[in-house]
Image 1 (cartoon, rainbow, N blue to C red):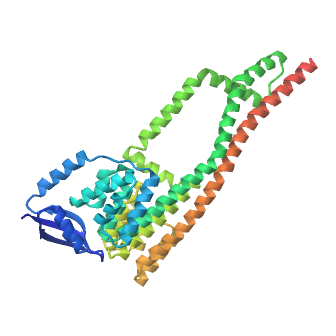
Image 2 (image 1 turned 180 degrees about the vertical axis):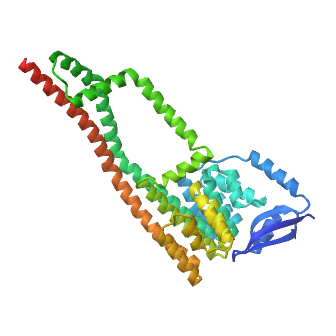
Image 3 (image 1 turned 135 degrees about the vertical axis):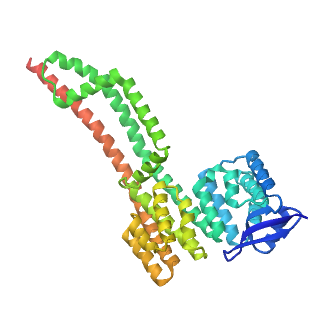
Length: 411
């Protein structure tokens, strides 16, 4: 009978290693489930290389499933509810797999359960089964598995996804009317530039009167667009393709991530989201007994912005050399003073997790306010810009017509 080496997490969040003799990995999984242990790794003692090859072959033939954002939210909420109720990963996925209705969630749960029963961690199974989860999601799940706080992290991730989904819905609703105004405005501008402007140009030439400056600029712009539209279109395409390639290089991607958080209005939302997620995730990990250094490494892996990854790595190295967390944030990052002060208070009182959770809740509330302001600001800005463009063009045309008519009457 083969011997299996396992690594698991108990209900207290501590990692447990050991060996079990069993007929198969499935039997090892059942034994660990009876002992209320969540497996992270299961390997046959004398067949590690064979197992790795089998897992690689299995991953190569695994059917890839795609989930929408709404389906990912539903999956995350259901799985966190089942884990909060006391179920282990395997029975929780089994419940989701046995749902009556046919859906992608049923298929994903079944495929994940199959991988988990073969000894894969949930995060590894997610990467193999469904690319829709993404690296950030899978890294957070991995952090939850190691720290024993998977239900809490899944719940927090579900809340985060709901917030982002609501934001997209609000932005879409706020942009619907401005988009209609934008389309109508572009249509009017096109009619002005291609039909009215050439006609009034002939009228101005007949009068012999000097054309107003604004109208003259409009005529020149119309002529340039008519003669060099292909150059304008080509320049736009080149700029878009060049920018896309730039942000997919290592240096360009980091520059773009840093630029994003410095943008007006939008940058404040991105920074607030990062502060809230960073503080609350790290609070969960520390509260579940994970050392601060390990928690920082896991949070860094779960951060999608490379600029923040670099800063977190600097802080991690500083803490690893014996420095305090708050001092590292103050010296090596651009975290806000209030965030650093709360971390310092947590270190002094010996309850860093509580301090991080409080500061995370504060930034979470501020994030909601910033999102409301952003959605309220978009609509009037778009309408104002389009109204201004159409108004300037209409004014230049009407002003030119009045001057031309006045010249004809005087003649």
